[in-house]
Image (cartoon, rainbow, N blue to C red; front, side, top):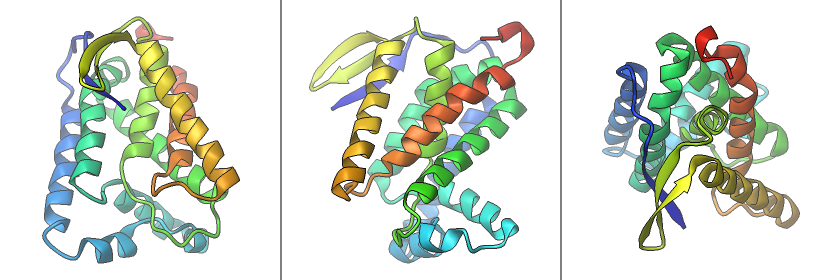
Length: 214
């Protein structure tokens, strides 16, 4: 287990969109946590077995609701930690509106990746980790020489971003391959993580501002 603590790339501009995404995610979870969380997840999460039968408008709404719902405090706080550390720098090079579009686009691709690989699943898929995986894929290309202070076991270690994110991606890909062969994912949508990360890498050259080109 390794947990990022901070990176060494300062923001040049205030990441208003990234801050807003974090606030909204936390606010939504705080609100739904006061009610029947399981019922909310079942009602608003993406259920692969029924998702592809929805009308296009309902599909789009379902993707948005699922992206902002989390299964527990550890789930949402863990996701927001990654978004806090890596999202501001990606927003820096894309600009506010492009970053917002990138976040939702990679989140959508991540969810669709999971749906297409698990079309018969009746387990609701929720969380921002697919979109955040896209942010990580973008950061991987944009800031490979950055350093990330990482908690490895109980020791803080300063790792190159390319190593930290490369190992993170390999863990997701390995777990997804084990889930495919073993039929179990342990409740984690590794396919969405892989799909989001790859989508982030592919889309970032199209969305960075010209003077920031990869």
